[in-house]
Image 1 (cartoon, rainbow, N blue to C red):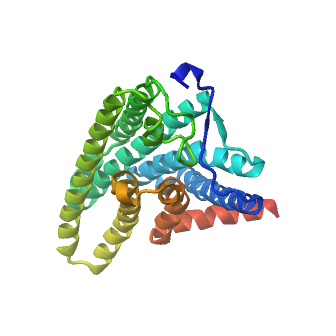
Image 2: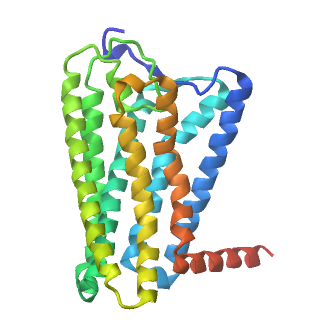
Image 3: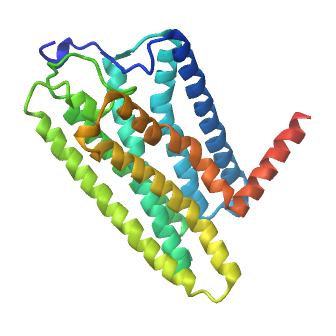
Length: 311
C-alpha cells in the first residue's frame, strides 16, 4: 500500500482469536457501555431536572457527563460489534471519524477537569467572589471554550495524521484508531510533524496538570484553616471526587503514552488503552455520586419518580 489513497479500511486489534472469548469480550464491553450510559444519563437528568443543582459545579459536571458519553460512544460500540461479528475491519472514513471525535472528547474533558479545579478553588478560597467570577454567562463561556479547544485540537491532529502517506500496511495495533498506532503505518518522515503536534498537546496537558495541582494545594491549605469541622467535611466531599477522576484520567493516560518502549507490547497496550478509554466514563458517575449528598438526594428523587411512574 504505497499511499493513503489505496487504503480503504483499517484492521483493528482483536481482543481474542477464540470465538468463546470474543463473545465474552462482547458481553463485557456491552455491560460496561450500558453502565456508562445509565450512570452518565442519570447524572444528566438529575442535574437538568433538580433546580437545587443549577449551580456552576453541577453545570460543569453535566458537561463532563456529556463528554464521557461521547468518549465511550466513539470507541466501544465499534469494538463491541467487531467482537460479536468476528471481524477486525473499520472503514477509512470510520477511522478518521474515530480519531477526530476521540481526540475532541478527550481534549475537551481534560480542559473541563481543569475548569472544575478552578471552580473548586474559587468556591473554597474566594467564596465572596464566587457569584461574580462564575455567573451563568461566565460558566457558559468557560464551558464553550473547553469544548472549542478540544475541537480545534482534534481537527489539528486529524488533519496531520491522515495527510501522511501510509506504506506499512493497514493493521492498527489497538482496538480503536489511535494516532500513535496509525503513525507506525507511515512510510514518510512527515510523521515528525504530527509527533511535534502531540508533544505540543502533551505540554499543554502538563501545564493544566500543574494548574490543577497548585489549585488543590491552595484549596487544602484553606480547608485545613477552616474552624468548622462540618465546613471542612463539605469542602472535602466536593473536592475528593474531582481529584479522584483527575488522578485516574491523568495516570492512565500518561502511562499509555509515556511508558518505556522496552515494556511495550500489543497486549499491554490493549489493557492500558482499555483502562484510560473505557473505564473513566463508566466509573466517573459512581465516583461523583459516592460522596456528594446533594447529588445522591437528587438521584434518589429521580429514581423514586421513575419507579412510581412505572407503577
